Image (cartoon, rainbow, N blue to C red; front, side):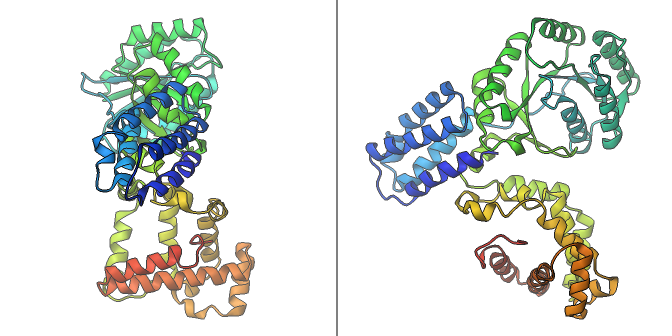
Length: 455
């Protein structure tokens, strides 16, 4: 998300950063560039106008022009205002009610409601330690009911059965009664979607809302629809007392206009953003972190949280102990590290959270296709156990055999071995207590060749 916006803004920001002095004229020129970048990112026009006006008022005042580092002060103003327009701080779910806390999910057909219900169920179960039940009130699509049942099994939460012959209100009332008996903390309700906003749809969801009185009513919207996402959200917020928005398919949205428009247009906070199809692809929406990502400052806090949640801590501890004892880092260890990286979304999943990615040339970024890490794992899997434990055995003929087994070229095997040697050196330095040495090694891997790692 935000690739095109980040690329446009990062050039403007970089020019400002080193300026010892700013004038009203070059601030106006910079804001023109920011305005064009926002419009190209499909941000709603009223949002762009309000944002630019707020930045201008602060930029030509004491705060920036009188600053010792005006370029950096202007960047801070832009980041602050981007954060404000998206809602300032993360907005939590309100679960402070007599259980079960009912969360109603609304939205158009195809927005990803059912998938989002599964993701939110997993989030509440694992991160909030809640006992969760899900139910489908989509009586028009039996396939949606089956899909939710499958998702509930995948993420390990309770599923309340329903059928196309039932009325949505009756389904949800029965689910609430069952949730009370089962001491469920949160009941997630999936509702029917339509291909467009119509009176019948709105009447039905209003009746359902009145019947179940949910503690949260979340509007699920496809971020790739850009400005339309904000317009649809406004229509829903006029019909229903929405408490928040979930933006889906943000990994396919290079512009990010929806994220910058929805809060301003609806007055409702974005609570979560959905990434990919996997059940763990749901992140809490942090406006301040997103603003930093837009300005190419990275999102290291989210990256740290991701590592804490998705890296197998037990395996990490065992590897640390092994290295500390001076034992050799082998190809089995490297495969484990690669698998952990793949669980975190691979290279592409990590890249957008790193500072300075906007400055990397397109031809280099385009090398990251998502296939890099699986290809390296496949090469290691083509080796025998003996070869993985003792990489020194890998002569030319063995490398040729491994390449054929993995469906790659011997040159790819040679690249992997170079990367392994660099990782082994880093682990050796870490084992000797040299964290600075390890960081130097990482810098060498990432930027030493002017290309992407694992290329």
